[in-house]
Image (cartoon, rainbow, N blue to C red; front, side, top):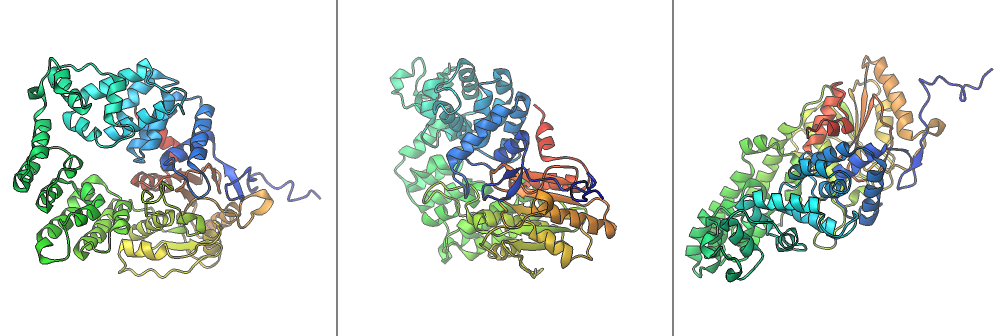
Length: 540
């Protein structure tokens, strides 16, 4: 009789793993487009647990070389910036595109370079020679010149914040021809040229915003400076270095938007704007109110991740009213997470590699306090909050039973989930638990949040353990009446392999922005939108 292992039905055969992941476990290669999309949505070009910054850059360039589709590169650059909210990766993709299709590069330039920080990043990448040139080509120079000449005064002033490279460096090499004396004077001021070198422009040609900023910096009275700061339209960063007293800092704080307030709580504490005594009560109430503005949070579609980052980074001396406002804001932001079509099994990777900073290692004092496990736990908590019949299973080399308190805040729940584990990685464990402990419960599918570096446990016939357990999960769910269960693998690190290959019932997606939730919801609703398809859907 024929060997059933060798000659099993192709429909029931498990796919053989075709690569090893960074941890040495069985895995499946992502296609070049999938792998590049994964890098673009998660890579920060900083060292991660298993890869150095240089390894990421080498992988990025190798994948770009494998993709003979410049339109896809252009769309991915837009997706990475506008949907995944990345900063360095979209600039890197644009730098690569400038070597391959200058017309496409011009079409997407403004969609990628939407602020001065990205402009300076792109300039630095080109000047480094890592993408084939060390200076601006004539085509790139035209793109830089157009951006500089068309940018608003406020945008250019904001672009002047930061060094290495500075906006001054960019202007000196891009050499834009100013369209009028106002722009000529502005360029002269931004590059630090003596006023007599601005001719035919003079100091009186400077835009009103710049003249007000100069007056602010020159005044020697805190009271007068606070009055000027209250009326200035310039970004708060431009006012900080010259602020003379806490009174001025209070005026600066009132000019900050909710995002700037959230990101600079420790700065406000350091400059005596907020504190725990009576004299700070009014400003503490103001800041807390701005942070927890429900309408602003819903309108901006902020994701709880941003509030968790602020909460984790907040000094112990930050007033409790403000910390409570961050908790409240995170709860409100959960309303922006879409409800799924049914309960799901949420696998939460709490292994040792997940203790790495979510944005990679950038050196002492510069590395984010937000770890991969914090991001993953917040994802799990946010899904659970909107889909309370779901179950969450933290895992490393074993799975952990979790009792979810419905009174837990979203940040409290995510913090509690992040404390589990710390050992090796076996991504099959949540599915294994679902197939045993929860065998009689129906689920729309399973969502694994991990860095996909599973190395413990081997599947049957050369597959990964995840795929072996997934086949059993599908079989059992169909017995319970779920005709089309789905597996979603969310990878929050820039690696290029997965534990489950892409197919009709399996979605691999990278990143930790709110765009991820929309893709998951569409996939579970049988909308058919997949990660690469999301990129392809970008309108140029």
